[in-house]
Length: 315
Image 1 (cartoon, rainbow, N blue to C red):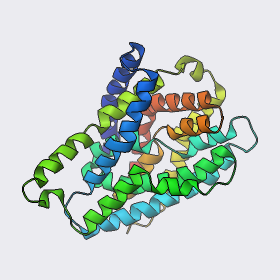
Image 2 (image 1 turned 90 degrees about the horizontal axis):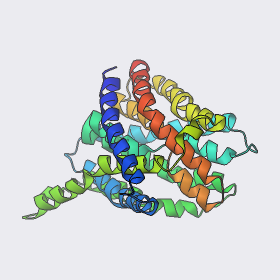
Image 3 (image 1 turned 90 degrees about the vertical axis):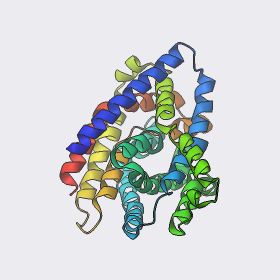
Image 4 (image 1 turned 180 degrees about the vertical axis):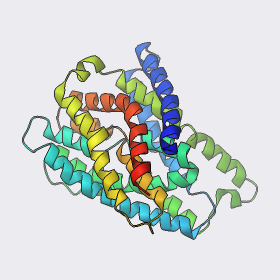
């Protein structure tokens, strides 16, 4: 339950920043186009920088073991979420692809990294990179094809070229080979500090973007929409609960932290990538953005509950 308390405090801090982002949009400090540009900065620069810097720590064989388990458990979580979403959101129904996508894929970068960093520090972020890597590989293959409602494996190449995947690969290589920026003579420490300053922008920037994006939706109308609210329930409550139950069955020999981190990542709100795909394939992008906004707001309440539930069952 201690994790739930810590997450509750982190969520409160993030909620305040989210409100600031919403006010910034409403007062025209940030425009709709500005929100997109800030998102690009977050996804292509700040987020990858934070991931890379999380690997800039002393090599530890136990840490590497935990990272490998994180990859395996992350893959296992998607093996649960994808079939479950197919049952919850049947093919052929109105907006099925948009809603199914939202049930599976979470905002594990924007929301997950600040939370995990607050809970477990750089070690936790390192484990979370495994989930983010599996997420990126699946979202640009399975998620892409599901939203397009067609098979197109060329998207897999795009996933491998994403800044997030590249930062994980470079970070792992540096970690395993014990290459540290601080080991560069004269300037290494300065470079590391500069990159860390950029990485530290992640939490405030991510939540300002989330707030500005949520402010672009009619939240009151969305709260009255049954399909939006049922999708939010599935994404924030039912699907994470299924993942927590899976993690509770993992043998005690497996490190505890990776399992808890996967549970928290799954409980994050719907991914912003869904709106991007919806626009690309002429799906209901407005409905997708409303799901993102509602799940983002409600996750301020549900994330501490999910963390508490995971802490009780995953031991």
